[in-house]
Image: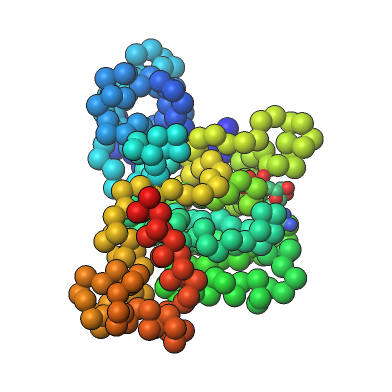
Length: 308
Ligand code: GDP
Ligand code: ZN
């Protein structure tokens, strides 16, 4: 896949991980893609397995095959609990600047309640969050359709509406991603592959439409990094239905809602959880509309999940 050739700067024998499968990974180094073996002692030693976006040191064992020596410290991570075993952390991507939650207006329908989880996962891992609303061409009334997302703009989170059918918003998305390493996350079918193709036609990724015509596997089961040039990297991630949250406590959950912070100073108890306490300023502001009720509901649901 020529378009994904790594052209960025990686020092010395450092390489970047573009795909991971069991026991093997694919690296970009000095403009070339290399197959690389992951020795079992590294797989075990790592707190969690190798992730796409990881910076690594590798050495050649033969011309076309290298061996992984070391995984360099991660700047940021995007992770979630393993759906099969919630005590195990699953890395989705590493060293990303931006996590873009891709949602769609229809097919699948917009469910703003799921966005809060992605935002928290991004922030907890150290990356900036953003929201991309695809299939805006399917909105009967775009103002009404985008209404539930205004609250995120109020929180200084970029919201880009786009359509891969009309091309609307694709330039704005390109600008948002430019010079950064970003992960696209979201439910399958929202149009992640179509968006990547719209950003860079040379990628020619299979989309659900091509799949219907029978040309190969569509469902992405692991993350893949693409080089869009000019130091811009985008990681396509497997479609995720509901994002479980890794390493979240009641305290860090509260901190994940920045709009609660100032209000909390006026709650009667300084360790107020804003759930059941009397004289709670957060609840007062939810009633007055100063804090968005949908965000408060998301907080309550997540707090309940944590107690399970
Ligand atoms: P992915 O699973 O997130 O990678 O989604 P795909 O890129 O495979 O797209 C899923 C379906 O949505 C396909 O049938 C696309 O043609 C369709 N689709 C993608 N983007 C748009 C869009 O902007 N507008 C409309 N109407 N359909 C879109
Ligand atoms: Zn309170």
